[in-house]
Image (cartoon, rainbow, N blue to C red; front, side):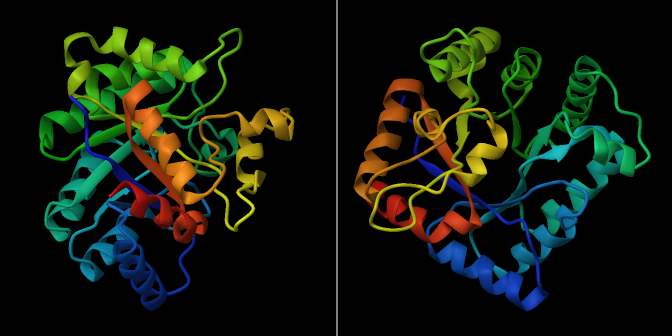
Length: 272
């Protein structure tokens, strides 16, 4: 069964309540289905900002992409989720991850567990939230085997980072196959997401690769341009690429950063 396209956009900076709410209404008007906040120290606190967005908009969903599960005790997080879901009239999605920035753990005066322990705790938090808020959709995003196994077994949406897997000719196909195997009978219920990190902003069709390079600093421009998370060409070309991702890999949900919103809105228009 072919899933409908969904499109999300992430906001990283907030200057004022008025500017935030104006931006949220503009993004809603551009056709985005959900507005996301990240969860990093130094960035705005997600739940107050998402509540302000929800109060300024009518239909767009709001969510996190993604909460660092290790920052939270499940019961306290569940309380925040309940309030945000109520104040958004049921428009909240919760994205979760295992956390990866050691310096943020240190700044928060929290221990920095091993990767395996962080994923175990992510599963604990996810299970707790699914039991208490079964109607709030959960996205889990990442790339490693352990994390994707948790996502496949518990999440509603699996976010694929688009990172390279060494020794594989088609890393995206390999990761989707891994999720399919881990999910078993529930695979067809899953929504598959890809975070787009580069989109052309002019008629050249060539994207700015600076954001993508943060996640793959050792790759050349030519290698970066072959990554699934990098789009090139005209809006119609990019729309065809996303149609191909849906047909080939089952990806139907795509997210961008707000700096790409205006350009990506043209792609959304091609797909609707």
